[in-house]
Amino acid sequence: MVNFNKLQQELKSYDAERENLIKKSRDVLKLSKLVIYAIHRDEMDQAGKLVKQLEKEKQSLDKIAAHSHRMLSEGSYRIAIQEYVEALLYFYFVTNGALADLPVPAELYIMGLSDLPGELVRKAVFLAGKGEVEKVVKIKDEVDMIYGELLRFDFRENEVRRKVDGVKYDLRKLEDLVLDLKLRKK
Image (tube, rainbow, N blue to C red; front, top):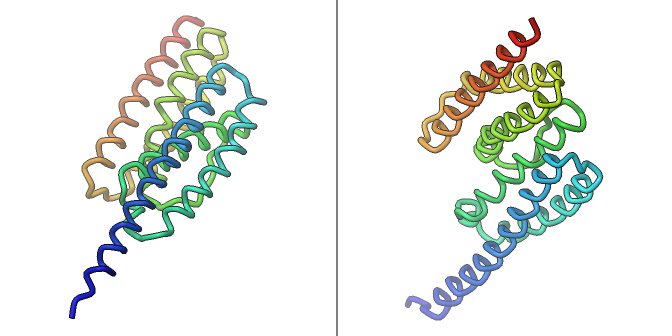
């Protein structure tokens, strides 16, 4: 005989945990945006504090997601992790000049990585305004490397392919910016 009470409890439990996941995802998303904003304002001490807070919130989010394998497919979780990746990679690039591995599913890492060049373009434009051409060139080279590596993958998912195409357009913007800066220098 089917135990309908058990089925109902299982669904109620999932729904309750899903609500917790959505709320915690918002916290991760908000902190990720605050990290990026602090970096753009060159408030690196504040960005560092926010990164520590973000790491704790991400750990809490992962604990909630561990409730069910289905949680990893929830849109709010996926978006929060992509933003988390983008924010941390941006922070690491600005502070260390390099990217880092992060403990997230590969697809979500790649999607967050694919969003990073948009922030790097903003940073490059800011640096160009200050006349820091070498730093702009370094950013362009990093985005070029990212794009080159992403081209080696065989992405079957439309969302991932679209994001990777976005990297190509950001690279073109940076190439144009570098060319413009070099032509002005002559």
